[in-house]
Image 1 (tube, rainbow, N blue to C red):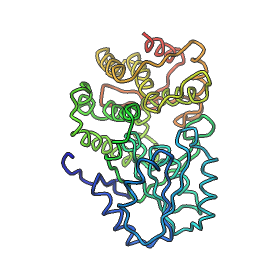
Image 2: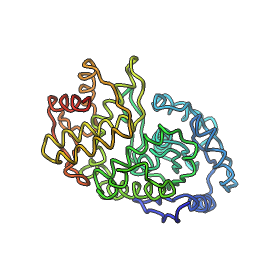
Image 3: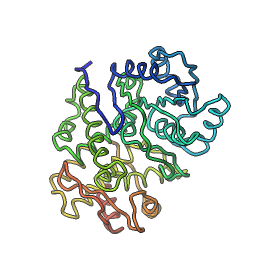
Image 4: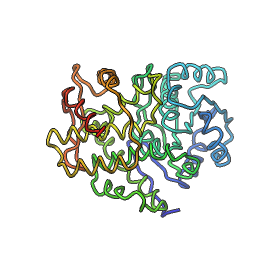
Length: 359
């Protein structure tokens, strides 16, 4: 294990790392007499992560486990209704606590369930995937999908604390690790060129230092979110790669002919496409673009797009939450490490970006 990582103070709540998290959790439990503690898990985290967490919790409160089927396809209001019903049956009240143990689906959905049950009860997030550690764990966004449209229903509401324990990553498949890596790469591209450059030779990264890279990623996201909690300005930078990435992810989710993509796989494509758009708008140099494209393509397999895929993907952009007054807004990069928000992009340029991606 690398050196001890300091606690990051996010707006109104701490983010603890590794072994620092559990004493803080137990102190909180001893100071707040919760009537019941509900741990929300999915089928994966119930099997792989809950056995690690349970022995570390010290409390006299009753602990109840609520499990739902893993997968983005279950991140919807029906799952919430089932969990609200279980909470009700088990006598949850306003003095109950929810601990969300899982990846982004669990923390997004569990945070939404907690924020809305009896107008809001306390919750704590323990992210177990790389993606949720560097992305979903920070920023107070909670929500669910509406059909295939990502995160359309939700609230901003902060957990009491977040515990990032990288030991949970030992159970992660490689493709899930790559999915989370996409958000780390994004943080470098939009905010910190030196951080981005640490990933240019992935084979040489010492995984003992990987905790430091995760830490810096959380730090970057927290700095941005602290300045702009409700996404009025700078926080839109975090949407780089996501305007097209989310549309691609949604399209592949609903299309019977397509394999569902992991979030990071879709975002990696989105970052290449939006970097091309940045190039065409003369915000980045050709050499920067080629570096971004080559790096991402060396990590992520190419996604195949047919002519018939283009229009449905572009149609999905209309539902992007950054849009204002019907105009589609992009966050583009302006040299590596800087961002330019609220950029309007014509459909022709989007199609051209797809053509370049295929080449």
